[in-house]
Length: 465
Image (tube, rainbow, N blue to C red; front, side, top):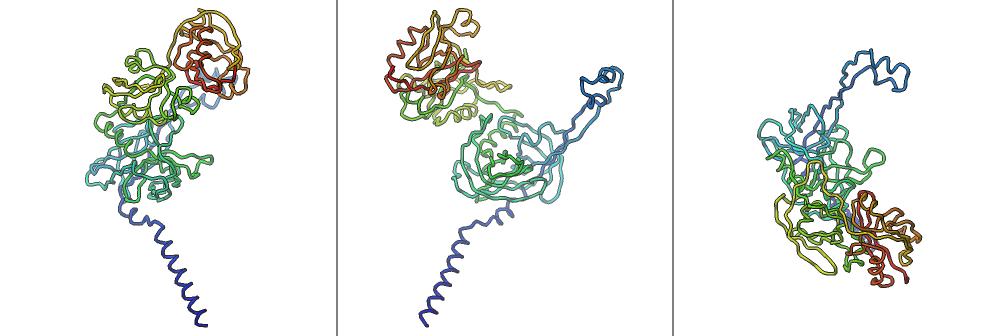
């Protein structure tokens, strides 16, 4: 009997101890929210769209369209559209960080603090490329937030978001860091922090906190099929945002570096074909004529491994690193060329305002003929002088037909122009075959392809021939 009672007591204490230990492992965000929530603001904007009444409701093909176009008075009509977002105060004199898309084309911006005070805000500057904007409200002594180091964030670490989803002020959501350094389509300059924090419309521009109450990111985007949170949200690292904000505060605009190359991802097959053991780096597929890279001696087929001492692990790393470098700076670039590493010194250029960072390249000389390249499973022909002039290239082969399904799968298409094999310029069919014979059976060969206005490398494994 005593044994049974003792066993029950031990079991009860074990359960209580287990619950208490488990409870200690769960984070408590209450102190963080109480201490830092006052510096998070609600942002409401008014956008006025103007149109002329009279014709807008009549289809252009309608029989009355021409009559109304000539004789109906066109009265300007204004429509107001309101949107909501979030932001946070970074200086006690009223500077606020938010997203550029939150305030884009806004005519009136109202900032509401946690204590219900409202202020009219003006835009100091906005940068669409990073989706960061800097606002200013008049006053002093505002609560501010501390800035953290997103580099120290670990995947799996708890993070907290405060914002105004759907207009509900000071809403708190929490989750973990799902990934770091995420690249998103058409987003070249931001290595996003991916989280599973519930982010919804209205959270945009709000802060992402670490457990020390420091801002590590600016909530910017969500992946959704329904319009609401699906556990995939993306934040701009705060160090990227503060670099942009400092330029906006001092000059009202952002200046970025450029080098004038087109790059592509380096696959394992392409890495092997260039003699690299790892697929790290950015493969240069074309170089802008008379651009900074061209002047420094960078060539198509170079693999950029380091830029100004910073490692380029993926092709998406390079635009961010280059853009963050001030124009006019002299930097050293480590490239992989023809089986060995080479250091090149380059003077960084300035990115044009229209965002055209990269452009296409050119090449070398023709002949005449048509041939089936059995080792590649393709039929190619030499280009006429007129075709070369029209394409603005000096040499290359036209892919007339792709016979091997493996080649199609690798990405080579009918109509592509082959302009390089590895590092060698393609000048004729004879020269192309000579270079191809030197590549061993079962090896990957890299072909530089011109497709429309773009150039890219395609890796193809050779058969026995």
